[in-house]
Length: 427
Image (cartoon, rainbow, N blue to C red; front, side):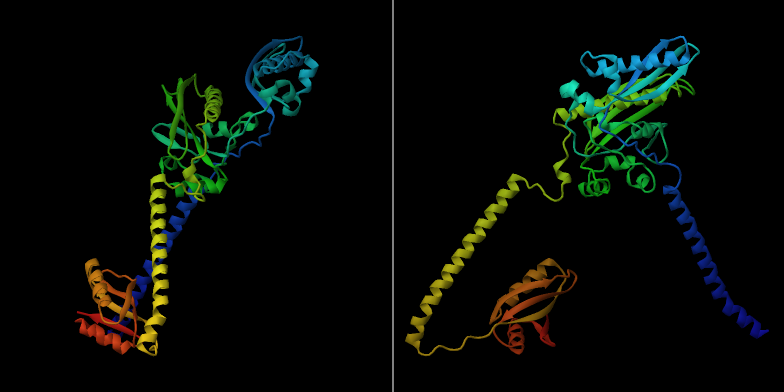
């Protein structure tokens, strides 16, 4: 019976350790699944490949014809003419206009037996249309700008945490006709952890530089869409704000209204185009320039600080010149003195020794260094390692042996312990 009790007592710690290990393993698995859940899932929207063609969207047409196909062809021709007029192009024939059209984008359409109602976009080839458009065909592009589309709805702000219509509107935007060089992350994988709404309120230039380097951008643009639903299934009020830079600076704001969920994509596309116009206007006004403080390779020094640095360097240069002049004068006087006093004595070698000392506070460090420097034969003493509240180390330049240095320090009132080419002193 005693043997069984002893065996049971020995097994209890082993069973306890095994149970704890199992619990820790389960917690690690749960934490790993939670971390993976933050980056897993269908949350990425890849941005469309943008070209340099000229894209004009949001053109509404309403045409009729003998057949549905005839009504559709009339609607497309009407959209081409309206888009060309919107660009401010000169009067040209229909055949010439059609030769410059690269594609017709169908945003929304309804087709009847003899009627065609649609909202279309027209893409013009910039190479062919640029000559007729003049200055309108050439635009100066901005530096690469990281785009962070923020949606605020129901008291929650999100960027890439889940797929949303505001992110989709910017991802499907043809940026070739814009003067802004947008850098649009897909939002997949780790983008949802790296780029969040909280990131827009950070001011750390080092943190921003790390984020921008991930995407090859020079600065950041923040279009914010605040959506307020009047009632379920009812109108949606959208307040749109344009901000930019690591300091989240305000550019402009406006309000639009959608009739309902079906009308929400139209409102978001319209808001996106207006925000692009705001960013383009800021670029023309000289506001949308990359923040110089984000360029870590070329730090900017304040003029006052630079002036102090220059004064310090000038003072150091004068002190060096004075020391060199004094050394030259002393070298000239040595031969004359030697002739008067007889043969010159051999110079004394100066050695460097390590000295450890107690340093309970900063004042004790200064006091110990001053006392050591005042010892006979000491040419210099400087702290090489400081440990406030512990033991610090100094290097002492002394014209003599280690035993002579120990004797000189004892003469200054120190208790000296001698080791292998090192001393330990205390009071």
